[in-house]
Length: 183
Image (tube, rainbow, N blue to C red; front, side, top):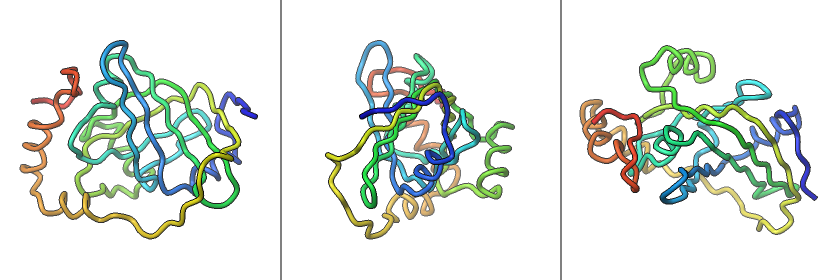
């Protein structure tokens, strides 16, 4: 049975911090819905009403485009091992641009000032609703290892090459919406 909460309770935070993967879901009023898996090592709980994740350069930037148009964002965590549970964080998201004061402050406070290779921006979620459900239908999986491909790719690029890639691939969503990355 699903249960709803107005904030992230300590037990929720503990669950979130144990996960290795989470999923983001976003959409604008028109166009495609985006659903993306993310490395949970990039996510931090700020307080009972806010989380953020350090977003890496990728082939698209749909979440950023949707946040600029609509703001709605859902993060989902599900236990792939241990006791079953699904936890969703619903709320309004926004972008902390790389190089901004907020980005720098969050980086220092939550990542000891160290960016991950290919860091592009931070996605900040102001949590309006937390929902848990049983997760009984989620299969169990065993964690093997992190994939190093994205990190190796980013490490093989100079900052100038990463910026050029972002200009070519990350300034517009698949629906043509701007993402906030200057082109």
